[in-house]
Amino acid sequence: MRSIWTETAQIPRRNPLTGNKRTEVVVIGGGMAGILTAFYLQRHGIHVVVLEANRIGSGQTGYTTAKITSQHNLIYSKLEKTVGKETARLYGKANQLAVEEYGKLIKRYSIQCHYEQKDAYLYSVQESEKLLKEAESAKRLGLPASFVRETKLPFQVHGAVRFTGQAQFNPLEFLRDISAGLTVYERTRVVKVQGHEVVTDKGVIKADKVVFASHYPFVNVPGFYFAKMYQEKSYVLELEPVEALDGMYLGVDKKAYSFRNYGDRLLLGYGSHRTGKAPAENPFSTMKQVAEHLFPQAEERGRWTAQDCITLDGIPYIGTYSFFRPDWYVATGFGKWGMSSSMAAAKILSMQITGKRTPYDAVFSPQRHHLKASALKFAVHGLESVKGLSAGTMPGAINCPHLGCRMVWNRYDKRWECPCHGSGFEINGKICAGPAQQSIPFID
Ligand code: FES
Image (cartoon, rainbow, N blue to C red; front, top):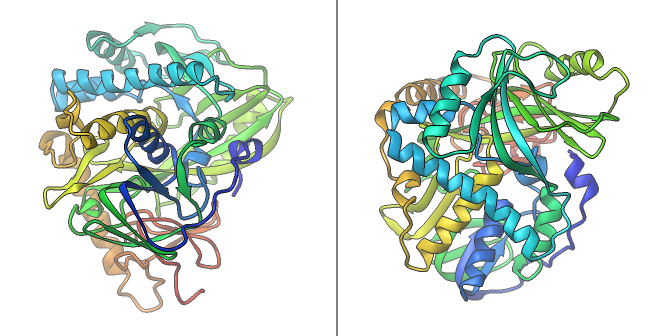
């Protein structure tokens, strides 16, 4: 699969690991979260090694729409209600500081990554009430939010929430420069982690601390991330030429689209669903129809899918992996907000690993319990997992190598998907998304 980022940015290759090594911190995963965490740790004088199963940025970072924003759908009104004003405020502050930190880094290191400051908008063509509530809530929490009636979208909206001073960029161009001074071993797959030993297919690394930044954590016990996180798939169509949009947009209606430009190209997003539960209609066909209506002069230049880890309360898991593994850390569950969450995770983890506390530790702690915020998703996730597991016992089922759920064929993405925790496999069974670690054996 290709995306506009994988087509337009070249990151120099790194060698695989050879033999055994010793380091202070090993980071598993060379995506945005892993590379940024390693970057800040190295700035703190820590010796750090990054292990990447494929290439830097070849995972979900290469398929994001790369909006850098603290506007995370209708999250602030929800968080205020479910986890309280102070936790919601700290969540917003950590993400807004992350947005600003990208700007500072890019300026300080003169990184050429098509960085542009843009306002971010949540819009509805049907109603304004929930947007008004969201704007009020975000403003109350100290975020740069306001409610507006007009946008520069090529259709009339009922209302929108505007966040000023947000940004967009090319994430792989950014990673190319920010990873330049780091020790990264590519094409080095981690097989298992035993205490302070990270066993790969190329050798073993002993480390004082281990950071799991591999999208979905693959160690099931301890941590039990499979019980508290699932994945969602969404679809992106790349169109050209389209006049640059003044802003980045995300719809909040049931059938809604996202829009952002990259030069004279438009990235149109749509069709989010639980991985393994593909919709009846073809999301790409729907987007093509919308594109023909709104941008009749534009032609399709590409299409791809993105996959995001969704936590039960909507807040990422950033912190120690488990009570039983105080030297393991994790950064996962970023939802659709991988760019700001990656930066927030990198800042928080680099402080924690160097022995400092942050005001955000409890908010993002993987050991938190937000029962009110999690109850509904916990029940749905449990039900879907039980359904997937029992379907896996049926004759003829293609079983997921993770925990054995029945795989489902996604005809729009041309991949096998697991409805339980979202592992993905190419048509020939080759693994392309965890938490599973192996390919599907019978197709191999
Ligand atoms: Fe967990 Fe498939 S991803 S059983």
